[in-house]
Length: 151
Length: 151
DNA sequence: ATTACTGCAAAGGCTTTGCATTGTA
DNA sequence: TACAATGCAAAGCCTTTGCAGTAAT
Image (cartoon, rainbow over all chains, first blue to last red; front, top):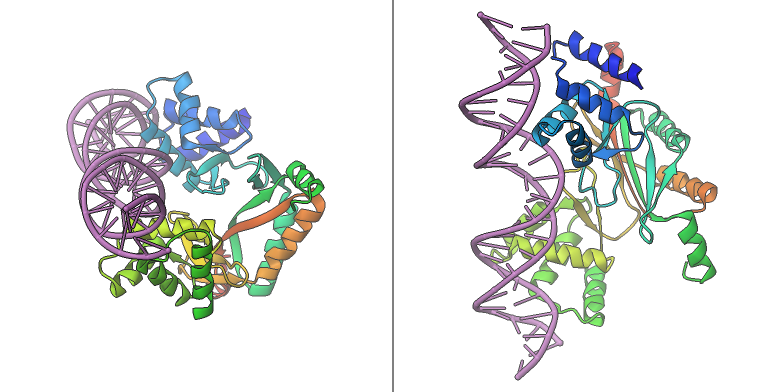
């Protein structure tokens, strides 16, 4: 999505930040993926294009992008070891991680959104971001375990 | 809840683990709180009772307790910096953390449970644990910001 | 010409681990 | 008496930061 890259660069410029080759590269890397990537994955993808980029720059740039709402940053793994990032485009994605096979099942946004709406209505709060990570068994493993009577 | 402590100690014994003074102390500390505590808070509470206990033991014991389902371990802070722990008793608690005043608003379990039920029904998955951390504004801050037209 | 940005390396914060010692069963 | 559990200190992992040099505007 070159469109998102342009928008982001314009935003950087407007806010007085410089549009450096590193920032452009990181935007390209982010735009090339739809999944959430962790800092190291982003670093490696960027590094394969420009071996001089440093991990520190990746972290600093991701932090800046997050502050400017250019990217979302969340935790999706059950152990929450590392943060993951994705260009802000479309609804946030939430997953159930299978503790048997490790697969991730995408949870449709409307389920969470409905919950958030009700939360807002009932409690009078406002929600700017939601991090929901579910752990359990994916459909396949659930089915298998059920047939074996282990669930 | 001395009852829970006894149960936990029996479980340790049954599974071939030793019931040490440190483990008993940590059970007491956990039983004395209803909120989620991080490892350091637990260490400090334990340390005030027995200055010889080490942080390493706290971490090792918490890990063991979690494996035995004696405690829940989750992340509740928006930055997910540290894990928090609580005796397994009653439904998991989820919070919205206010980015203005830092307060935590408890989210009733039924809201999340309903979402999980629908998730299970729609996707055919099974859910063993859910980590939901919401970030936004608490009821008070939401109200204030609304009156100022800033929301 | 400014002043922000970068790379490097070191440090920070939380958690885990190796090892010799202690103590439960 | 065995062998698990502990305390200590060091290491691990992810992330942040100080600093001197570099480059965008």
